[in-house]
Each structure stands twice: as structure tokens, then as C-alpha cells.
Length: 161
Image 1 (cartoon, rainbow, N blue to C red):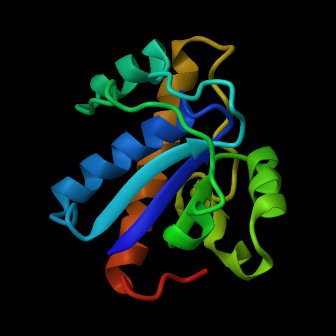
Image 2 (cartoon, rainbow, N blue to C red):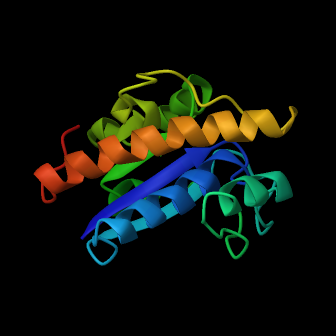
């Protein structure tokens, strides 16, 4: 079983959208039983909260339901439990790396490191913007998820870090 954790700041916009989009892509690829997916935030602002309604609407238009997800914060156990800890931007990358044990640093990467169209860019927080920001995020996330699945398929036991 490969385990993937998506991480953003509050765990109500980007990371739950990424969790939902990855789940959908895994199901379409017939891999939903081989990969576990979760999401978390670096901050405690929205623990227990559902995803932002705009995030829910955006992914629903793409055939994904995330209304049942609830915000949580990254926990120390996550560094041992997950094979991939994928962050949405440079700030959250720095926060996660600062917290991660040194021997787990290689697990922490930007989600868009898997993207062909948007390599190594930030998935910018759409919280204070309009609906277009959520759609742009989803375009980036969808592309990165395809690349991630390709890596998982090529070496599901030993993820490249």
C-alpha cells in the first residue's frame, strides 16, 4: 500500500481538492485499493471543518465529492505513515520540512513536482480570490496527479524521493 498525504495551510481548499482529485484518478486507473490518500493542513485554523464551499463546488463540477472530508492538522505520526507528503506551495513546504525528522525529508515534495504543464510552481491559495482561482488550482492538480500516478505505477514499493 502506497500512502499519500496532501498538505496546504488550512486543509479546506487546496489539499482536500487534491485528495479528491487523486482519489478519482486512482479509481479510474483501478488503483484505489493500492493507494491510501489523506489531506492535512500546516495550521490549526480549520480543524474539523468541511472543505470551503467554493472548493466543493469546483471539484463537484469535475465529478468529485469532498463534502465529507474534515480539516485536520499535520501530525508527527504522518511522517512515518505516509510515503509521499505533497505540499501545495513553498511556504508550506518550509513549514513541513521544519517539522519533519531529517530522515523523512525526502518524502516531502511539492505536488507540482509531478506536473508536466506546471513543474515546480506553487498551487496558490485561492481562499481570498474568486472562483477562477479554484479552477486554475484544479487544472494544476489534475496534471500533477497524473504524473504522481505514473510514478506510483512505475515503482509502487519504493517511491522516488
